[in-house]
Image 1 (cartoon, rainbow, N blue to C red):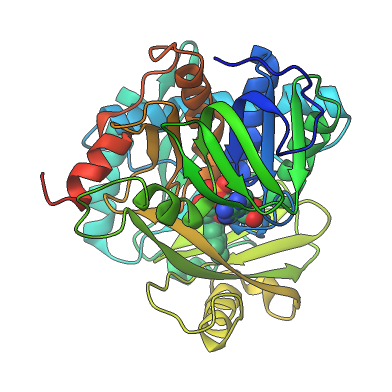
Image 2 (image 1 turned 180 degrees about the vertical axis):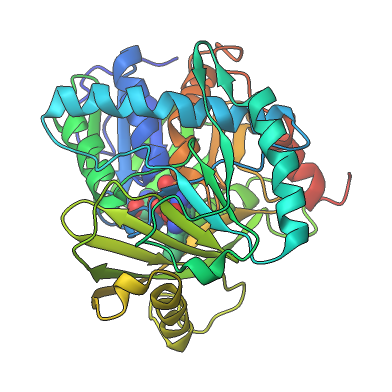
Length: 394
Ligand SMILES: Cc1cc2nc3c(=O)[nH]c(=O)nc-3n(C[C@H](O)[C@H](O)[C@H](O)COP(=O)(O)OP(=O)(O)OC[C@H]3O[C@@H](n4cnc5c(N)ncnc54)[C@H](O)[C@@H]3O)c2cc1C
């Protein structure tokens, strides 16, 4: 890899080991791992750090169902378990809080057949949700485990209480990562600079403030990664991914921040610190206005007030919309480009980026250091797999 003579030189004059495109949750974690690895790195964000989908409100860290165990579920499980210590280390280094808590999750079971399914999940969790001495559970309860929080009538056939789920405050976590990086020795952050095009063969990025040479490039530009990668991939029948709009709201309510996340039919209710409760999210494949909210969010807030009666009169203090990166094969998209191995994708986290980003980014940095086995990734996550699907080859 190329070494920079002057890592602090402005773009257009410098040559660096690693270029990271995008300062959302993916790019920020990649930059943290690059700093630890001592890689001479520049991170460009077209706007400001955390101003994309990662600047939202919800921060639910939800495990997959524990049935039909797979390498993908194992990867996610280990990521969810390890995130706690990763965040604690950064909080200790920066003195800031990310608003993380393993508060668990409640899922009401309105029908008897759902209870039978949940009994199976409970056994599956006992078998698979194990990490060293640690055990996490998919408990089945007749009564809601926290009475005042959930409408008892919502769980005619009982309630699931899972103890693996957690939550984090998205803006607080991006602020912790950004604060860590502002004192970095090897990573330089450049906000307000857009990467317009990449020539991975030559190792040159054209940016809105000049050209820059790089040894490796990690593309972590959220949904805007897809056109950058499409442009370098001949033979695609369809784009490598698409944006999916989501809307969420923040309510002010004096509820215990330790209360579990609630989930039902795509509705999340996430208690945070400081008397805030987040409610989300819509999932919209087509939309005219990417960043506005509408009556779909009103409906979600109404559903949340019904499920958690203590939110009945809670004031809505913020409404927010963002665009999630959904890769063509739905799973995250991480790995080297088959034709240009110096180019590494780190995107496609769709609805689960916050629980996985630290491990996906560690894998991307392993690839950038020519250590592809540093973190093993599920095969379906690879950029090569997504390219095959978008080329209709699989
Ligand atoms: C309403 C809603 C609720 C959600 N809830 C959850 C949840 O509870 N749990 C969860 O895990 N996930 C959730 N998500 C999904 C999660 O927010 C996203 O998957 C995640 O933020 C994506 O992170 P990212 O770093 O890939 O992209 P982003 O956060 O979008 O970051 C991309 C960055 O790249 C920059 N950029 C773009 N193009 C360029 C360029 N050409 N040059 C330079 N910079 C560029 C942008 O300015 C931006 O800062 C939710 C999303 C929405 C919309």
